[in-house]
Image (cartoon, rainbow, N blue to C red; front, side, top):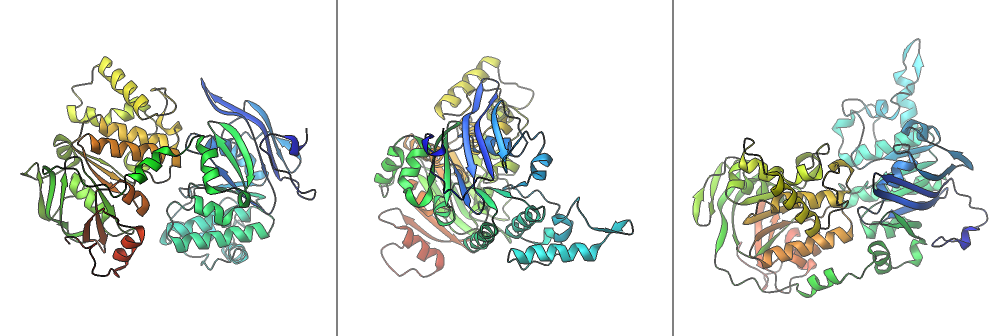
Length: 524
């Protein structure tokens, strides 16, 4: 069967032979079929996007290609030769290198030492530092990067560290460079620098596999894409020949009625509730957040908009007692309270889901059930274990309610996709039946399907009377869900306005400090 005859596969030019072909690859973990006869081709000198919602099989496919997972059936062909990679080192030896979202380098070594770690040039039995720095500089210059090879890696921002990780991959003569969510922590300028490097790799004939949830970025940089859903190949497409709406439908396999409904509700009036649940009065912390007033009412979603470093997360942590305020205070249902710790906040029906789910939420070696019940058990105290029947009932209910996949409560948390991990963390807090739910970037780094589910859940929780503080860098998302919007800049609250006919442009003007005196102005 030729490529043109295969279902969902585009025709290749006669002079373009894949550097990598994965043919009918299948992997199962117990009863869970993670990949079901998936095929993918990577061409030299091409940026190829791997698309699909969380749980679609993207990470599993990458780990199969890079020797982290053994495949059950199928073939991996690199440069025309069939391979079985038992380890990542074997894949790297064949010219396949991966740069993950969390940079896996050594911050207390220099840039050059990281780039040539394990492959250092030697002289008279020791490391030849001069030769190492010269070789690292040549590779960096080849990629158009002005980075001092003798500088400590840890002194550079994450964006530069990722570029160094890519330079390390290039230095080992990689024929394929896999970039797994490389832009999730980068600002717009840093993204463009990364794209410049990716274009240089393409010019040098390297195949770049790009994994991202940012559709605009995929359409800016990628040539071709492979779309997965539920562990199966949907289609291989040319990016330029596929609309974003068509791509989304292929990824999630259903219409976006959920987001459409939420968008139709945009600008809806705030609920008719005069019951304050949580009130901050002059709340602040030196060097972290200036004095801030904020009131959250029953059944209301309050969105927090602002750039990174504006004080959004700092406010959330003070409201939850994760950090201690040094001025101002809190009222919980009109009663003055001092939150000395998150435990005090939980006791007062306040829940907080951190933006850093890896460091402050997910416990990878525990099961889904254990992760889900952690907050409830902490609130009861460790000497009062949750009865087995109650545990099973709660876990079963929330797995079903939040559509967590796989549905096995005994699955290890580390084996879940990012979107499903986020759902487990949300279940953890919903089980405590909070009055106030603080969500800091709950949809960051997850696919559009899981994002739609979480956004729907937030709207439904508010409709049932819960007070939600919703923080997101995506202004469209803030406007889609919020009844009121608080805008922050330079670690202080600068504006508060009702979400009535407010546009993203209006918020951007406020954040930039260029807002006109209009009817949009609300209490500062």
